[in-house]
Length: 221
Image 1: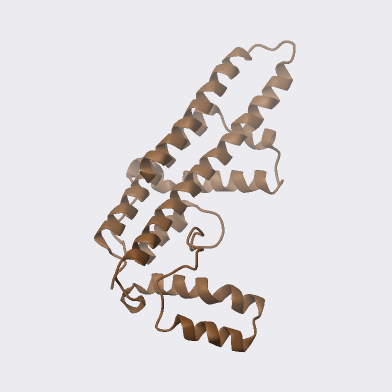
Image 2: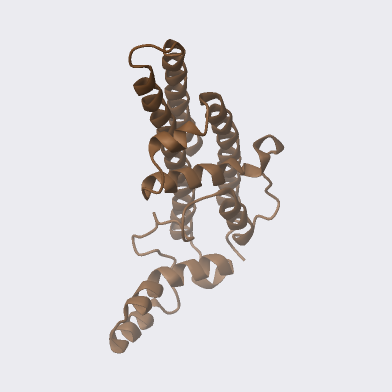
């Protein structure tokens, strides 16, 4: 289900890029409005990076949420989980409270309720368990940390390195560090389309790995 939804989103981006290519073909000859059209098309290419990143974030979040929900519905105890998930749960319960500063008595009351440990993310299970934006290194490290050391990205995906380019472009646009025209001007539609295919294959492999992980209950000690 998650892979199908992700592929649907990627297909939407692919259709968007095909439309851009058609528009670019219509504006190849200099003439009235040529330079304005060129700037607009460059900005439109940059927008594709945001679309791709959002699709990656969707797939990552949904696979992690699915695993967490399975763990919560499974008849296991906190101490039966791998250390990574134990830490993830404890951080969800207490990290922000400790960072913000909290009344010690209230914190102890919550700690008593938590012991011996509940397999729950306090309705915050949609947050990804690592800081910052998603790239290939974080997803590869995440797979290792949760106990699946066998997963490797397909060779055709270049190790998922396109995700770093997409994350960087997305952040530059989101934070106003670069204009859409500047970012889009660095890439052709073909460049972005090639990256899209590799990212699709990388993420589909990641999704299938997470589905196997969930089905086999690898999260248990």
